[in-house]
Every structure is written in structure tokens, then in C-alpha cells.
Image (tube, rainbow, N blue to C red; front, side, top):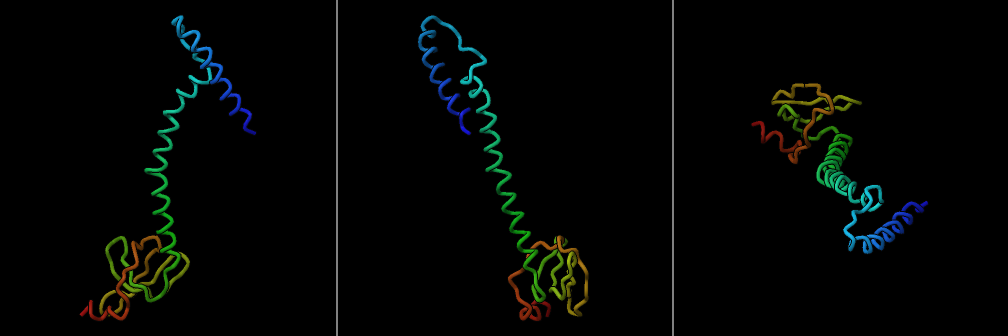
Length: 131
């Protein structure tokens, strides 16, 4: 399975041994050798690794947190929508959320993906906030 890796390491050892003898003569290494291929692709591999760890992986973690938050919504949760509307969840459907908003508990229907976050303020404290 890893025969190609063993071939590369043996080719590198041969190239190094041959390079020592030809370096004195001033010869240049063969551009098709495995050592030159590795040195050519190594910077590209490092760039991909850096992009993965600095951009892709953190975004996946953030997406997973949002997905978990949306899956754990329940009636009575105080939420904030992406439009800045605060409300209390009255009911949940598959892709929609029914919110009670304001002093008169006006019902508004929102898409589930339009919820930014669940607030720490509970329903018992809602009367104090709206008064």
C-alpha cells in the first residue's frame, strides 16, 4: 500500500548520494527526479494546509454550532432574528418558527434559518423588559 513512499525515500537516498559525487563536478540535479518534484509540490501542499486550518475548519465549527442551536429550539425560548427582532417562540414547525413579539404578543412567522441566536433572558423576565 505504501510502496510508492518507499520508492520515493529510496530515490531520495540515491539522489543524495549521486548529488554528492556530481556536486563537485558542478552538475545540476535532474528536474524529473522525485526530490525536485517534492520540492516543487511542497509549497502548494503547505498553502492548502494553512487555508484548511485558518479558514475552512473554523467555518465548519461555526456552521455546526448554528445547526445545533437551530435543532435545539423549543417553545418558550427568547430569540433574536437576523433582522434584529426579539421574540419568544410560541410554536415550531419543520422550517418555520412562530414568534410572539411585543406587549400584545403579536404572532409573526419566521423561517428557522432567520434566527441569529437564543438569548439568555427567559420568558419570566420578559414582562420586566417590555414594561
